[in-house]
Image (cartoon, rainbow, N blue to C red):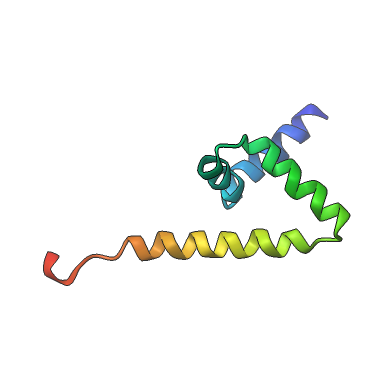
Length: 75
């Protein structure tokens, strides 16, 4: 049973968007407490923080792609 939970944890750590980690670094708060906050509020509010989480992941992904642009004069 422990192996299954380790596999699930590894899957989410490698395939997650990194929103909680990024927020934790910016705010100076432990990542685990931010993750617990998202989990608890998701159960209390019937899933609305999932929409906030996905929108934050989208914004972070777009910023990453916009930073990779090269200038025209670099060629």
